Image (cartoon, rainbow, N blue to C red; front, side, top):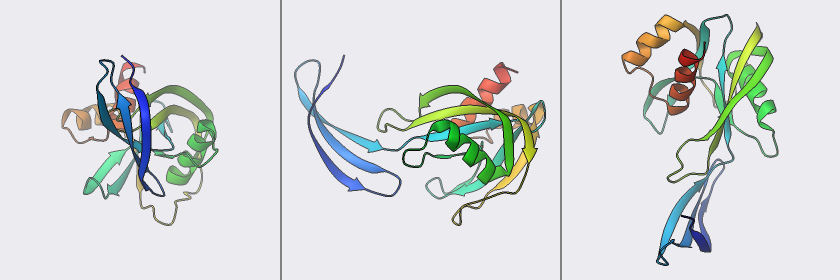
Length: 174
């Protein structure tokens, strides 16, 4: 079932993503092209400031054209380990620091066209500090209880994939 790469051409290299086109040989011997968006990877944090509550940030997402409710998250910096990135993103977006930061899972966000991996963490035993947003970042952070989250999910108010994965995990692993 593997595909063998025959050639590679970078079409675009940007600050966050790059786009490459690979010529590949399929298992049946035929050749085709695969477009791949390269991404450095990202972390996402299921943060619990109190038992049975979770932090969500509201921010405008240009590509989606609307405000979305999401768990705190962000991309890995060059050479940064996921554990360090999770602690940094939690602090920057929410102001919270976690005494316990536990890795839950690693998954691909959209493997049909991107190599982006997401590292999902759970943050507990938290203490609040100052928010340290990047200069181009505008987010509002709020805590929500389990009943509120279930209602928002049921009403279709949460549409971000990483947030859906994390919240559904939380609701099934209290």
